[in-house]
Amino acid sequence: MSLQIPIEEYLKPTPSIDCGTKSIKEKTQDLTKGQEQIAEKARSIFYFVRDEIKYNLYSPFYLPEHYRASTILARKEGYCVQKAVLLAALARAVGIPARLRFADIINYLLPKKAAEAFGGNLLVYHAYDELYIDGRWIKTVAAFDIKMCQENRIIPVEFDAKNDSLLHSHNQDGKLHIKYVREHGHYQDVPLNEILDAWTKAYGIERVEWFKRTWGKPTKC
Figure 1: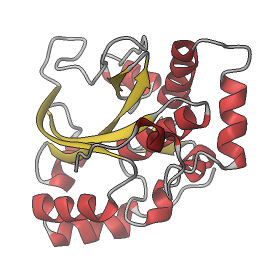
Figure 2: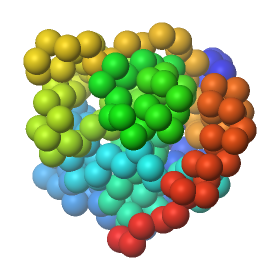
Figure 3: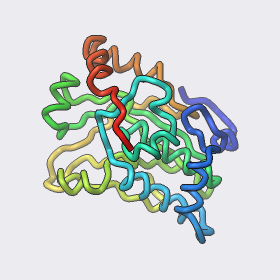
């Protein structure tokens, strides 16, 4: 749900966005070393999450610990919500207010395996970020890494820390790719129960339980 929350609240750690942990702070310091401008720091953090954290739709997803930013950093992979959490944590650690946003999207180019699993191409509670830079909130999504984009002819999302940058409506060949169909607003932390409830309503309890059995296995770092 979208609430009027003071900007400084989006700098604080939460159970998932654990921006005060040693590994998150050290990674942020490493990524932004020698940089003074907020926009420059934001870009460095964005491209690290986009390209160095592999997009994996089949990441474990059903427990709170699956969304802890420090865990995602160590695993080096995650699906859209997990990558958005890590981006928010790194941003907060360097003093950039950050929050999560969620939307339902249609992915017209969803791989056959995924489309069969979900029973279609609707993905509910897709996540992205909003970073507070130069007095305004800027939307961005670091979900699809550059290697995945190149292999699947997806137009990669670029981030200049000035303009909103979301998933593209078409791919490199001009085919329909992503359509945003419903917004759910912004959040300080991951609304896990809300996400799981939405998945159950959209895909059915049997499918979600199957996801847990087959996708809910952490991979080695």
